[in-house]
Length: 273
Image 1 (cartoon, rainbow, N blue to C red):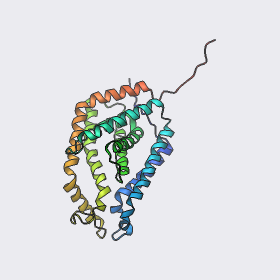
Image 2: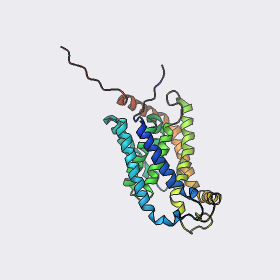
Image 3: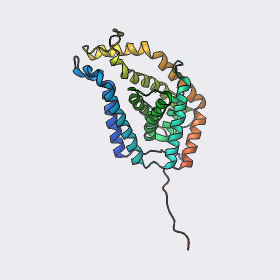
């Protein structure tokens, strides 16, 4: 009997277009130091960053709302979204300030895997928003965190073999993804603050007069000097929790998805005569 992957959120054409749009805006917002030519006037508007971040937050909220609306998300799926987002938000403070130990990431990897890329993007963004409110981490960086976590969780839903891969092979795939994606998340988040650090560390700070290869070398040095240890802790924690708790969590998520019957159409029968 073949397995069928059940996804709580189906990505329709408008949702895909909205995700592509916010992805393009996100790439521009994260990667402008490498996209703008040397001596560009873009860096002269660093003081406008909070307004740009606020605009990105509004766009993210609109994308999440459009995805939920177009997918016809039912009350059971909304309830699961709320439970998983609350659980992820509660897990985030557990390892705060402790060498990158962040249990939230493993839960989002497994949730994205079971519930698909659409649910994954919504869950990642909502979880980061809720955790920011819970921990007092609301600031100009929050839209970047929401977008990066949405990508992180959506990526797990795009991994191959969702309908047929099970057991140790699936756990190995998820552990490898979690390890690499944890580093990718940290690297992306470094881009949110690196261009604005000024001359605090002249050898690794962004230089608006330098060419792209020179700034890329500076950015890599910045990542190695500031976040490599933290990202490694996050990656190792994600792998360990995925391999140890992953089987039980995956079973629970798949059982809840089947019971919720997200994709089962509702039918009404006429009462018998």
